Length: 59
Image 1 (spheres, rainbow, N blue to C red):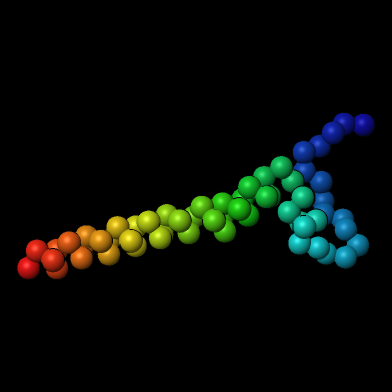
Image 2 (image 1 turned 90 degrees about the horizontal axis):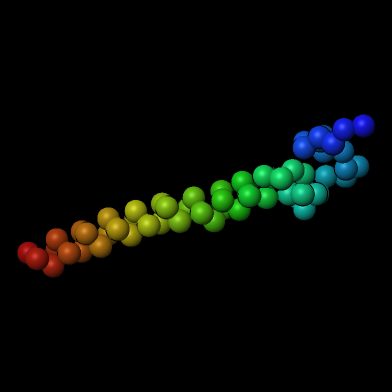
């Protein structure tokens, strides 16, 4: 028998933590989607706000 990287999710009752433990990248994708990607939006939003404040202070 050979070892496969991905196996079907076969829990009897669905659980969130079982889903996170499903594969080698599931937890990484979840954490990046929840934490890292929103940080990019926050960064550019704050950068734009600071630029606008600097322009308004110069007037």
